Length: 543
Image 1: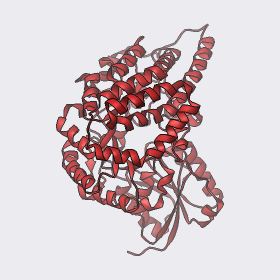
Image 2: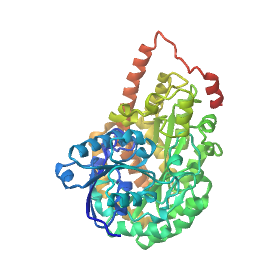
Image 3: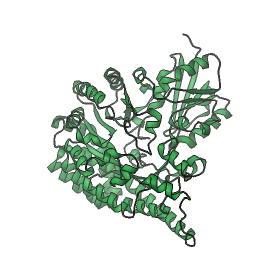
Image 4: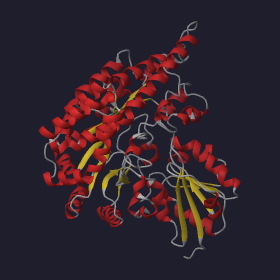
């Protein structure tokens, strides 16, 4: 089938600033403009007809020019909830220039009513619906909704993303995707609502073709598997990893790998060994809470079946460091939950803990329950304005069972304690000394160190001259690691980079929430906290 030529301007919206994943301050030090690439957008670009010309503008690293809009026949945009505010602005700008706008991505799929101003909304996974949109566009259709069947997109049809549209130097790392979906049922999570509970995977041949393309384009360094749970389909990932290991060996291990997985990774020694052999060096794990009652309440029962600290230590044993996510604000959170969280983080020796307030995302089990209980804030709890300025302050967009200021106080206490420099680098020390001393052999460690030696000196120079609160902790840890576990020196540098921005960010959150606590206490001094009228129903649900 032939198509008329079309100039497509893809505009990737800005994320809210001051995010736990924004690396503000650290990315500039490393010479990058943004942490990672717009993988979804360049994947969609690869699905468009060959005769359509694509121009990508990432507003997180560059400005939109009027010349770009003038060139375009069609504007494509969209993304996730933290990009919602900027996506709406893009629609306005495109319309002011007289250009039709197509919006897609997770947020328009979850909240299509908020994007009524867009000419066309593509909802669901692109592989399942984009061909319908392209054919309709060819026939002259310029408005409407195109909705993919849920959980049916064949990811084996997903093409190699248009990595050629990127300038790799703009990013700290590059992402690829192997699977979509997660087998678990966490109440607050929207992944199972968007992609289902039966993880679908690409073929090993697809993934190796993507690696070949990246390698041919000259990219080397940190490669992140962006899967929400890489091990959601263990059979598939175990079939893929030997291919990945072979590819890495053939190309002399050009990539250091990271990903996200569930805590049950720690139960599978065979899988851990394969990930180690493939050169995975860090994994993000959603722990959420150390309290078994809270984990059961939020349907994250898989984390109750094993000791959290022991599980983390087993992963460390295979030379893979753990970054963990924690959440404050569950209905079952009790006084003292903050102390238990800090103790868990310390016992597990998790240096980097992303501690956030619970946010009821659109179309999740949590949101549906809160609506039923009459506790979700106005507009279905979608509060763009609150998070538009500082993403890390968003959360608790519902009536809490305990006074809001108590939960904010717990957040303040946890962040203040875990990001105290002495406590933070104490955990880094315990982690790096427990990491497997040999991963892939000293020659690879030496080569990786030489490859990043300029970054090492930039970081150490910055810490020495500009960060007195962490200076001696870092130097002492670097020297001890070089003597006792030199293969882990990169893990020390990664933890240092994280602290360069997490230290100030945690202080910012502590200051802002401390002020909010004071304001709330003043406002509530004369009136008690009022629980929902249907408290009995809520209590049963929480039990």
